[in-house]
Structures are given as structure tokens and as C-alpha cells.
Image (cartoon, rainbow, N blue to C red):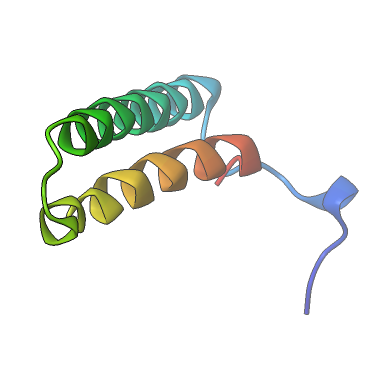
Length: 69
């Protein structure tokens, strides 16, 4: 059973949301820089695969911050 958006209550404080947002944005930027470098040196796609974890962690931090969870 889902509760309407207006009735949801955040389960983390503003400080923790800010930490998650900063971590998420930082992880996304680091992932983008590393991906750019790997593409610039024409590395094999296999070496770019671990960047999925970096982008996943960054997206997770941003989405958790915005959803207040």
C-alpha cells in the first residue's frame, strides 16, 4: 500500500540529505571524468564496465537525497 506524496514524512534530516546529495554529485562527476579519460585513451569497453558501479552509487545518492529517504 502506497501513501500519497503529500503524506510522506522524511526519515532523514537535512544534514544527511545534503551529505547524500554531495556524495552523489561527486560520484557522478568522478565517473564522468574517468569515463572521458578512458574514452580519450581508447581503452577497451571491458575496462569501462566498472564505472557502472560509480554511476550507480552517484545516482543512488542523488535520488535518495531528493526523495528524502
